[in-house]
Image (cartoon, rainbow, N blue to C red; front, side, top):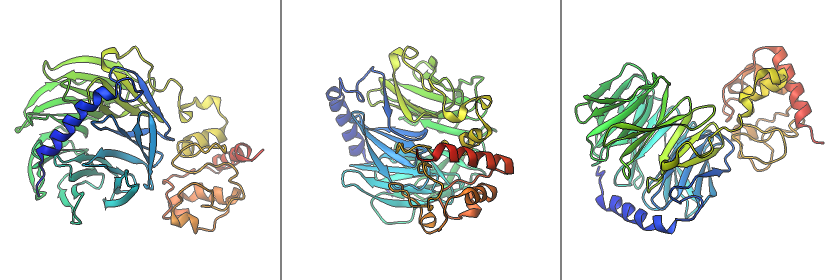
Length: 443
């Protein structure tokens, strides 16, 4: 397997420099301007930025957003939340999610196909330097490298003792780095899948990593709040930027400005200068909730971030702290329980992140519940139901909704997209059904 193509890297760099000037003044591509991208119906789980200013977003609403000049083109096909997105060579995009699959999209042709499948959710992706291969990190404890141009089995790497959370290629594409909840950073032969060495044994689970462009250091973030830099190839500790916040959830590297962005569970984004190894900024980006996704703009002037909101936020690096923060209004499921009836509380906890109550057509991971009583399951227009639900023959009523949450969707309708969850107390189910009847009935 050949995993290096300097032409692909050079072409993207040259193209990126050329289009940066053309993008000045636009809402999305401009340097040093604050902007948001709105349209998703769920939290933003992954972000990728291409050299021409195009942005990809992966969302809990099961969709991928491809944004040009602030306008979305929706890539639909996943059966569950999308966690990761990446640009490949040409007009191709790779995405992966909770449905265990990787999808390859040719968005110019409007085509997609399943590239491959793991045995559990796929959480991160990394495209090789040649643009022809992509690596996936999965909660089935494996990594795999997939060919984007040949119908061949993936190269599989096994050996982690827990879920794998992140993955990155070396500069020449010959090695693969992985971060796992087993607390280790490992190095693999990308051609054969053979383990090369355990680079770091941190002790606490690792969530994210970035590798320097010259393969001289690797940065990683852990569930105990650790942000640490280790040298390559030996893994010796170089710097430690551990804060009292935990855990670290996302990282991104900006080669233009020689800096790392680090996002954590309390909503901070920390910027580390990799030339001086000093913290240049520590910005409270959100009033509530985590930072799940980070990416720099191609020119390095902006940092894009995603979290609990349905919106991507992008802040100019040189004015962090002066522009609006994420989560200026709390998500409905974060409301104070004292402000809600028990039925509404059950809906907010169990249903609201996937479903709306009104006929507004708002994007969500699940269909609107408007008019649900008396409706046959799998029949609302415009939502891509699973084959299982379309053929279930269930009519939603007090009894069937009670059974759904008493048994759990995985037992009541096995094979549907609905996530595994139960409401075990009969009174809680009764209160939820009363709330739904009141809020979803057509006027």
